[in-house]
Image (tube, rainbow, N blue to C red; front, side, top):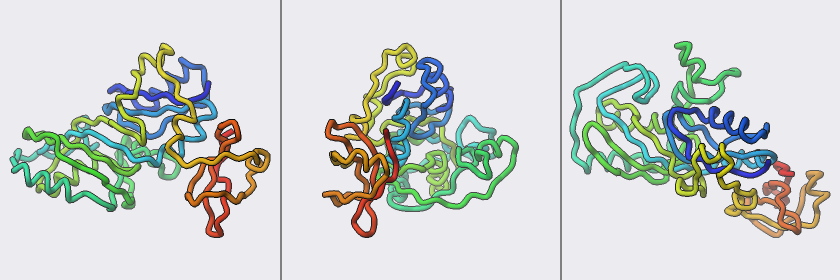
Length: 281
């Protein structure tokens, strides 16, 4: 089986749970997703099957859009309301313009310290595995970019906002950082991924439909249509990973054969040539 499923991940399941369920339903061993969603989060989860999994590194780097809700006056061990309560404060109220100004102050390139409950690896283990053992690992700040952020609703103690951000941005951490600028504490209380790259929530199928083989299977051509591509008859050279001279100036380009099938991802070098970065056959 080959292609992509756009799944609206249900709450109460990890992204890995979704993969395991689909692996069992489809019988396909090669299967992966384009970015982890928290167990209680819902929304867009792009799942690749078969050789289409070779495309996932490029989808992982795409921007994401989320609708998030944060609850003021509470701090937890996980940064969301499902963790152990570590601290509580009296609920403060704020003028709408103050909240809007604080949210907008996060626009642009910045750094963020990943939470201990993230899936980042440290010495062969995920950070959340250390967290379960009550072991704190020092984390270095990572570069992120907030492309858009806007207030959707404020009903004390809850602030609901929408954010479009670079891959690797942790919304639970953003909630805590927003609260700090409001001189209080907070925990994320809801999260929906509404967009992942070019895929919106409206294009997603339910996991139930996918398990019953009722979901749309999207082709590699559909998923990669937003990327620059070049057709070539040099199939043997491409499959041998040979560097090529291409009539394009794009940094990353996907090469296809004359029938349109995707063969490989090539990246532009300093001398203007293109080097094979990943085969897709």
